Image 1: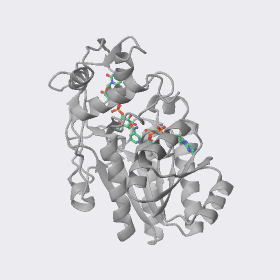
Image 2 (image 1 turned 90 degrees about the vertical axis):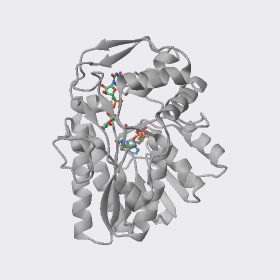
Image 3 (image 1 turned 30 degrees about the horizontal axis):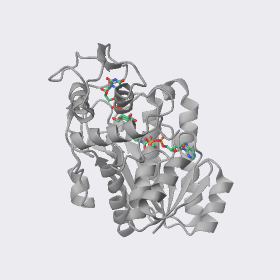
Length: 337
Ligand code: NAD
Ligand code: UFG
């Protein structure tokens, strides 16, 4: 297939573009580079031994999208482009709704006008809010998310269901990611956050490599076995392969379907720290701090729908997530810079 990948120069997008190239697809990446890297795209092409096309631009630029669809004979779109920092979304909600909601709306309108009706969308486990029970499956009610970021994902989910109901030519995969971590085992591509990271793994690995002094564990008084929060960490290469499978599915089935992409196992913050210390062979300085507003005690996926319908399940262990994160961080202490 010939694919347009929006946000393909970012963390999950870059790993997915690599898997798509390796699966034989042709890829055009559209990215405005606000949080992506051209170096990632260079390295992907080196690993795959194949080239891709890159267009620098914004999903909100309708004229650009129209030109792109007119020139490129795109069969399907894999849509990663968006803003993703939960705290920033509270301070700058308009940016999040403009980029994540209006940007996706613009993309769908351009797709419909160009006759492109296959779409894979990056949603998030955040749409479950604070679930009444874990693990969560796709039939669990979506709740009121705790941030504008989460609401932007839920709004887009509703938008996509409505669009597909109104025009059955659409074939849409909504993928709810749990906690993507890790890096490609080559150590050539990985997560490269701007500034001080918000998420656990990039923070932990920057402490281990000496860029940051100390990790703060956000609370140890949750109702979990060791008091720290439990999440479902999924290796980014497994996640990327889930996109390849979902594209195969939507090329054969019409409709708008939702799948959880998680490993189906929960680990606490302290378990992750300990696994990371094993992987890097050193101890990591951390302290216990207060709870972080908006965090929930536990969330992990019931991922069997994806296994049944897509033939996909996460294969990589917590140990390999940690080893691959460390390989990337230690080989690239300044990220792509
Ligand atoms: P990322 O920031 O690394 O990648 C996003 C990419 O989109 C970047 O390269 C950025 O430059 C580009 N981009 C942003 N706004 C754009 C715009 N308006 N036009 C064109 N390009 C634009 O993020 P990621 O971690 O790779 O996440 C990819 C997607 O997955 C996002 O939609 C995110 O919300 C979603 N998601 C991520 C996580 C996570 O923990 N990383 C969890 C759930 C869902
Ligand atoms: N944590 C710390 N210290 C840190 C960073 C994180 O203790 O410095 C803890 C958090 O409190 C949480 C766990 O590590 O208990 C994981 O936190 P992350 O920030 O890595 O991930 P979240 O589960 O908060 O959020 C992630 C994505 C969101 C997505 C959500 C879906 O970042 O985009 O999963 O559940 F919406």
